[in-house]
Amino acid sequence: MQILVLNAGSSSLKVDLLDSQSGDRTATLRAQRLGTPQASYSLESPGQARQSTELPGADHAAVLQAVLPTLTKHPIQAVGHRVVHGGTDFSRPTKLDSSVLATIASLESLAPLHIPANLAGIHTAMALLPDLPHIAVFDTAFHSTLPRRARSYAIPQELGYRRYGFHGPSHQYVSKSAAAYLDEDPRDLRIITCHLGNGASVTAVEYGRSVETSMGYTPLEGLVMGTRCGDLDPGILLDMLRSGKTLDQVDDILNRGSGMAGLSGVGNDLRDIEDRAADGDEACRLAIQVLTHRLRKYIGAYAAVMGGVDAIVFTAGIGENSALVRHRVCQRLDFLGARFDEDKNRDAQVDRNTPVAEISRSNSRVRILVAKTDEARAIAGAVGKVAAGGEELAENPPIPIGISARHIHLTQEAVETLFGPGYTLTERAPLSQPGQFACNETLTVVGPKRSIEGVRVLGPIRPKCQVEVSRTDEFFLGIDAPVRASGDVANTPGVTLKGPAGTLTLKEGLICAWRHIHMTNADAERYGVKHGDIVDVTINSSGRDLTFGDVMIRVKDSYALEMHIDTDEANAAQISRGDVGALVSSGKGGTLLRRRTNFDPA
Ligand code: AMP
Image (cartoon, rainbow, N blue to C red; front, side, top):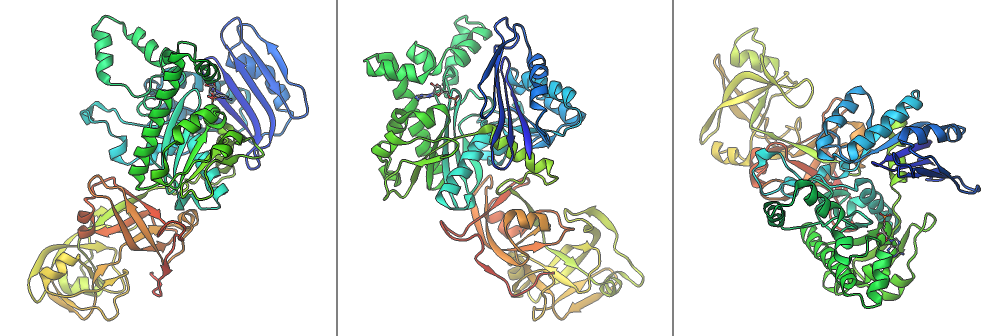
């Protein structure tokens, strides 16, 4: 599928026409200095000489208007737009319509330089190509899986600041390229991806999901960049403002006058800085030392965050080309199991045909790789999936956790015994699974030792009665109930239920619910699991992380994606509302599935 990918900056425009699967380019357009008398663009197609055109005063619309007749000679199936910020609203590629556009516009304060430029590109392209689907791909989306502890700043939460992360398509793309090179599933790997371009960020990709990243609320946090400072004591900002600098001056210093340019005093191009450092320029030497020291610090930190690392990946202009930076960053990483090969590093070269090169020694446990990033290809791939009618499916999207309190399922006959002849259950609140609800009715569960009052009945009625309690409840009641999947009540202990109109002693049906995940067939396909599989799920709780083994997969198209655990399990992991889990493999190189159950859960 041919996808037109637009990346509109404030004074620049990058357009690529490429195949969403092979990545083969049909045309590449680069326009710069838009809105100034020096505006120009160049257009390149395979087998044809690059055409450069001056278009004084041209804006995004003028350039697109000039080149579209050439580009639309080729069939185009969809247009992909890079959008720098999706806030908390967008965690997936999203088809653009007026309401999505309005939401993107409302995010302008999060990226005041980028969002207006992104929108200008989108509006122009939608006006010029009204019959094609237009799909936005967000820089922040890949990082929507950051756990709360990683996305929170230690300032009052009501101020509304949080970490978002950027360069998502690149981190996701190179982590997948690295996994493909290593012949592994990304869900089996912990990867640190270092995107080192003029803007730079590093991400911890744990089993296919971003769990930490160095850019935060804005792309200013983190690594030393071309002209951006990265991490900084916020006290410096206060001091600058107190000492009389204006807001605009501070903005200018931190965003445009810092980083490699600020440290070296010779601009932001690392090639010049490396040359001068080699000639003995002290400021340039310091710039390289600060850049590489900080990245080493992050790599150590991210290995600790993930409890280990399987691969470290360098990408973007500096990551792909600077052997010196890679050498300085990877020295003395042996303690991590990362053994760097100086010769391979010097010779490493990546391009579209050879997208990954290895620079670790053959006995290195941690593989060190150089990978070619291709953001347009990453966007085209995502857009192709959406345009083909399938949603872009994340590698390992988070699974919402639902906590089941003790509850009772009843047959109609039991309802009438307990609540009176002709009685029907009444709905109090819907449950997350479609068609299921909590009832107004409650019962007392009577055990040999003690009773529990007020146990809620869930509807609708079922063919068999079943009482689901936690391990703590079992001890309290004095009955030893087995862990069973819902519906599998053969040879389980009975229990007595007391209602307003009568008492019913069940011969069987008291169980401790087998923790499970409800999902649709499409979900099952996406996670690579089947009905009845047993998997491990790691919980990024706000309190105590826990990996649950023996989690049963239950597939039905009427289900909503959710993992159900009981209150004991939730307490053990200190889980609160909104916490999510992720499928993990049972170990490095292991398969996702450990075994399948004999029982076929209904
Ligand atoms: P990007 O933003 O990914 O285009 O990367 C731009 C950065 O890559 C600039 O700072 C360039 O100086 C740097 N870069 C490109 N080629 C090289 C090279 N051969 N050696 C060192 N730095 C390079």
